[in-house]
Length: 141
Image (cartoon, rainbow, N blue to C red):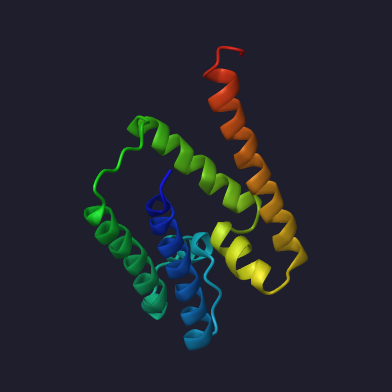
């Protein structure tokens, strides 16, 4: 495994941290992506221009970076992606926030609730990867 494998995630993490910091410093807002998207979908208003700008910036940055990638392979069907997206959306509502809200912004503010939420979703992710890659793929289950 070469060092170049770690460069895109490092750049992505730095961009997430930078965007969260800029949003907090410039507008005094927390960059909880699920909350921002939920607010825009629930009641779109003209006063939410910063939220629309944030969402468009997220999508545009992903599109630009994806276009620069040499090869991108997800390895699952579109139906699996839809189900996964719905499960993530359900989880963000249950947990009152997402990885950006709890994991980036909440932890940086020393929120106990965010620490618990981050531990739960990271632990769940590790369990799902272990089961899907070792138990299901290995034919144990």
